[in-house]
Length: 186
Image 1 (cartoon, rainbow, N blue to C red):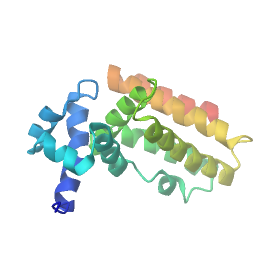
Image 2: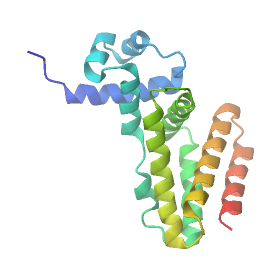
Image 3: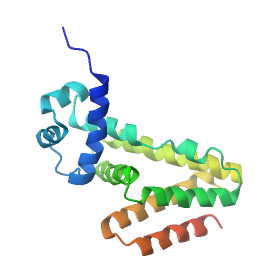
């Protein structure tokens, strides 16, 4: 008879996965070193999550912000602009959010490969962001085509966040984010 899952241990492992990948990267991810860093075995990781890819998807799912909640109360154009810049700033700092963003960007890149195991997760993540932001655009009346403007802003911000993670150029990337918002939401 199979041993029941220890949900507390499972949650601890998921939290540690994002930190590990943010530090070590996704490209060379191997279960043995990951398991050792998490204080378990690769066999236990497979027991809890099935595959390395499913482990990563579940870890990211626990880290994804509730984007709908971030923009749910926004009804005024100026508040939407400020909230978007605030969201960029929050995800561009050195805290836990920055770890999640670093890992998410790696997964989105990996999802571009043919037959990627991350395709469904990446598509759902992008869809969640676009849907939530398009709803806020509708409430504020800032866009004739909310899905297109949401796509422009979400994709643009994602690119600027990636630029910052690579170059560490705070000044230029912060100015770029603000310029993108000003151009897309005049």
